[in-house]
Amino acid sequence: MTTQELRLGNYVYGLTDRIETIQGIGKMLLTKTGKLERLFSVECADVNPIPLTEQWLLDFGAIQKQGRAYFIGKLNFTYEHNELSQFVRFHYSGKVAYLQYVHQLQNLYFALTGTELTLKTEGK
Image (cartoon, rainbow, N blue to C red; front, side):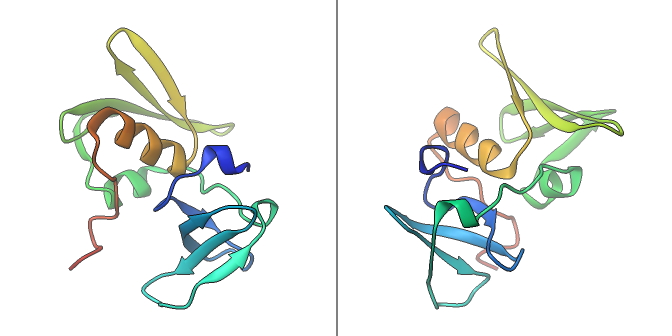
């Protein structure tokens, strides 16, 4: 991964394959795990993208309309998967975007809505 792909609040796998949240971006990334207040300084090469699965979509509050069609807020998309790959296909204003990772969905959602996409369990 590169720092250009990441935004504050993105979820990634950290050094121990635990889900971490990006808290700062510079020469080193600042991340935190879960609700721990302890920040970790890691190199960008030491974090990995999280594959975007149907469970992640549901955890973000996506609602299944029918078949593979889902929506979050006013954004509609299709979840595709097979033995070789899984991805989300967004159609927006005549354009199509294919997303494979959680941080890509978070970034696109923010770009289109101006709102952060976080897990629906956060803040409860």
